[in-house]
Structure formats: C-alpha cells, structure tokens
Image (cartoon, rainbow, N blue to C red; front, side):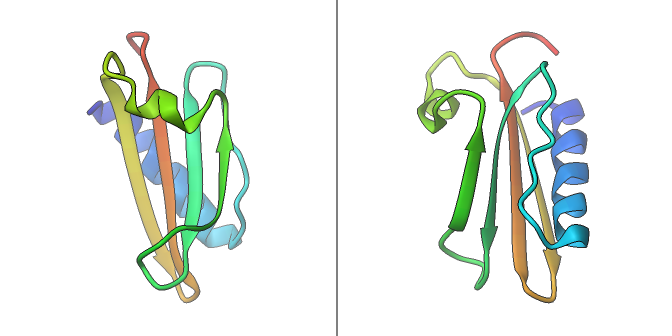
Length: 86
C-alpha cells in the first residue's frame, strides 16, 4: 500500500460522501475504482474508471491506496492504484 495513494483515496471517498454521488476524480497518474455500499456490505452501483477491475488484482500491482467514508446514506469506497512508482 502507498501512504500517498491512501491520502488521495481517502480524500476522494470524503468528497464522494459529501456530494452523495459517485463521481470520478481520475487523474492521469493512476486508475481508480469507486463504489457505494448502502448497508456497509455488498457494493451497489459500483463505477470503474481506467482499465479493468482485474488489473487491481494483477500480481505485479503493488501500489494501491484505499479510502472509505460514511455519511447518513451509506459507505463510499475509493480505491486508487498504479503499477508505476508514484
């Protein structure tokens, strides 16, 4: 996990929770997966940007950041990842 990408992903999740919408904040440096879970389990309305979600699980994928934020409606999840040093 990357401390820098964790901060970026946490900021992304907090923005999603504040706006109560799934909005891509993708920059050119990394890919992202954003999702919403109403009950805290099971993703609903997940949105992916960049390449396929399977790239996140690729064995050479080592630079990942996770962000979670809750509001009154559920939990917003933001995963940022890249295979290049960032």
